[in-house]
Image (cartoon, rainbow, N blue to C red; front, side):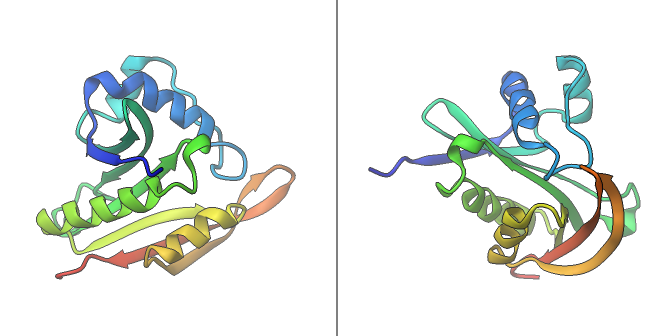
Length: 164
C-alpha cells in the first residue's frame, strides 16, 4: 500500500508540529546544537508561515524543507539556502525526495537558479540523500564544530535549478 504524500506552504497552524519535528531531527549527528524553540512565538518569528514547504501523509506532517535567501543582498536573490527535516518514523518513504522535487519546482517558478545547504560530515545518511538529489560539494569547513568529543566538518553543497 502506498501512502499519498502531499506538499504545501507552511501555515500558522503547523507551528507545534514543526517545532516537535525540529526537536526530533536536529540532534548531535545532524546539527551543531539541538534545536529547541523557547516558545511558539519564537518559532514563528524565525520561521514565519510560508517560509517552508511541508509534506505529509493523511493529516500527519512528516517533514519540511525551509528556504530563504542566504543574505539580504539583492545580488544574492537567485539563491535559496535550504534546511530539510523528515520525521524519523517517516524516513525512507519518499518524503524527503518529494520535498526536494517540490522545492526545485517552486524555485524554478520564482526565478531561483541555485539551491544550497549545509550538512555535517557526521551525518552520512543526509550526505548520501543530498547527493541522490543532485547536490554536489562546493566547499568544506574543516573541523568547524566540536560535537560529541570530536571535530566535525561542515560540508557546503549546491544544486542548479533546472531551466536556468
